[in-house]
Length: 270
Image (cartoon, rainbow, N blue to C red; front, side):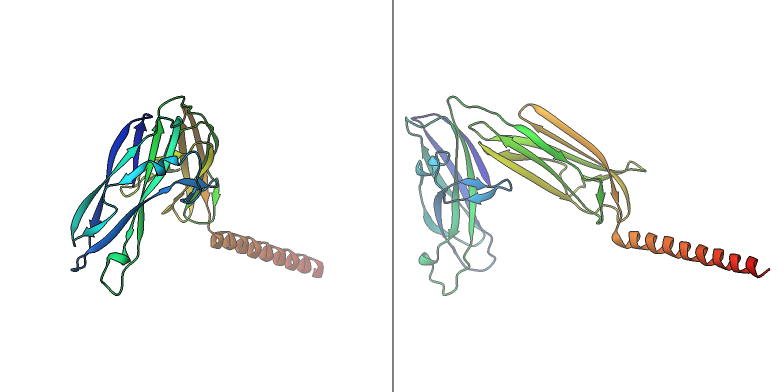
């Protein structure tokens, strides 16, 4: 759902997207393609497709060859686009989305399923490009009430072009050393983009941990030529177990107290 380009001022570049109609019925897919500026809001990177900045001028440089059309059921259509970079384009990152949505205006159906998907364009205009930034936090928990763990890392980008962080997470049983994560279904190593002049909070939830026990968690973050590794032992202890321990201790204390009192009474009676 993303495409990358290295651009030079005054040059033109071709790209394309594929629109697939997986509909098993006989309905055609009436689509329209549009271009929007792309940015992010906040550390959690909420997509912003409306605010125009100097970092998403590329939205004006893109033209779609066939912005509307029809795709038959179980068919695929390639839609091409052209990026024409102005001679005066500033160096650094440029970002946009190519959105594909249903086109009810072109459909004869009374009921149309409205949808919208987008492919993000990550482009870098050649020139004085600066890759800067650092790993601010690398956090691994040490206690959890639930059989899951929330790990996170916070990374900033002080440069003028996007950069990528590589994160590797491993979880092993503390006592046996058996690998718990990654599984066959999950990838332990993944990459995340960090936009220029932003700070990003990257969270990942690891589930299917033991309901009660201790696991060893390692998170390695590689970014901008630097690596941060944090390893901690996570104690997983559900609330019911804590309540059970408290109830057991309370019961034992009560039983011992009653026995002591009875013993004192019996001794006093003698």
